[in-house]
Image (cartoon, rainbow, N blue to C red; front, side, top):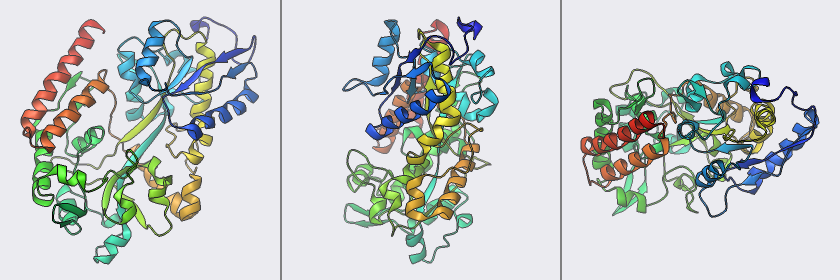
Length: 433
């Protein structure tokens, strides 16, 4: 604490108000932090957490945050939905390593290394991955049983070829409308690092500061997906998307087709499992590990975090970190009850269960599902760890669209994205901008 400009322990001395933001999340989500703040103040009576500011209205949150940092008037602490590595590369965040060493919960060894890597830049740590929702392949038990297909988790396909053969058992077209889908292969930019790792590769090599988008295993990965779409989905991704919402969660008011028994399998994240699409009494489902690609040798998983950071220029660094440390080990338990973003800190008990899932499916089912997702988090591949993360995600989205809509072949689309991402990355390390 002396290194941060004060020798006064948190909770002692003059009262301080910590300004805390979130990028959004809705009223119930944000109100939960105000409840946690009341409990926090019982332990730290001189640190008052102001009312949570939820989002930035009609403006883009990260742009507003960066503008406030540049003006010297940032919040004291905030949740991020974009990689801390990217903001750290712009000099916009406070390094946390010294504070973490003396923390009660946030010490570096208490975080999964692959998850904490998303908060690191040039050897320093700039965020805490307070939650990290892991993912798996959701599947409809009733649809499996109706076709006489073994539905135990251990029977689920172990390879991409097996998954592809299984998918064909379900897929049904009525004219140009996709009535039922088995599994629609990888078409989401944020999930692509998982499929790359399953095929023995990666999209970004943090150790060597290099993108590898057009590496041969990645070209093979996308060629495999395009051939799958051609044979099973008429090679027309536009028709697929017009036929329904196949993403496993609500998108712009469109409910997922899983609710209508129209999809046998879909990649889903742990935070979805307390939503109406998954808590319907009559909907029977399970989740399984990802199968391995032709170039891979182990099953991995992925995650999508909420990060806690302290912006550069914050006036109350120690008090803000005390709040973030508390959120990491204590407050996150209250957060998790109704919003099942998996607590990433290893000090948090692993037997927590989301209320909605217990109510809908029973404690035994909820316990099994949450144990699965925690194991998936332990098996997560590194993600979200690039200093140009948002730019790269946009480039990967563009490349995917070119491939899915047959504007460019996989090798060409990935090579173009590789050139753009590596150029942006080189600029960051050359200029520090």
